[in-house]
Image (cartoon, rainbow, N blue to C red; front, side, top):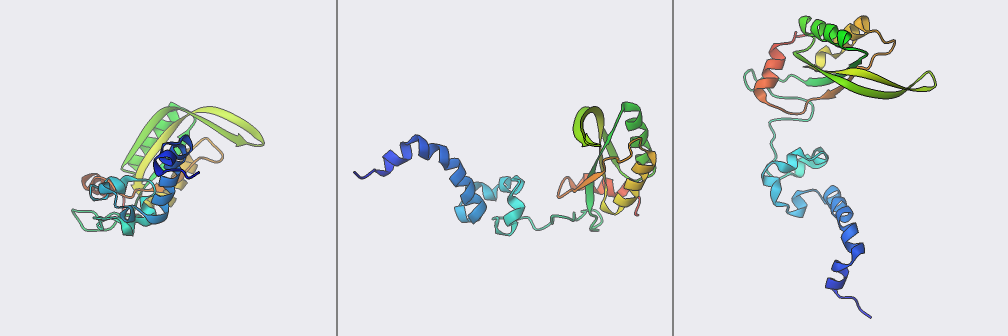
Length: 183
């Protein structure tokens, strides 16, 4: 007995697997090959997997690259990063954030209280309440920032992890550049 296309499309199995098949097609063939209308609106540029096939996106913006931001005001390319540092308490967070900005190692430090960290330390699973520092700075200052954190932190092995900033408000990124030291 032959199944009709409408019978297959209306089956529960087909409907449950369709999102998986759709995701596979997007990742395999790219958005431009699927003729998806939102590629011209810029929505596709915000998808987390867009960098995998950025060259295929319709209407691609070539003014930014993955690791460098072109600053409008000065036309100088300045790689920028966000750095995460956790601290054990509010007092250290305030002190460390202030010293980082004062030394021009970062333009801005956000202090996020109430972070609960679960990690393994010396063979035991630990759970601690911490404060998270979100630090915006130049990539070229990462080594100096890391040394500053190590010298002023209570932990034996403080968390210092960096991620590139791949885009943002040109005015904010220009301010970030102007608020930090050159190197």
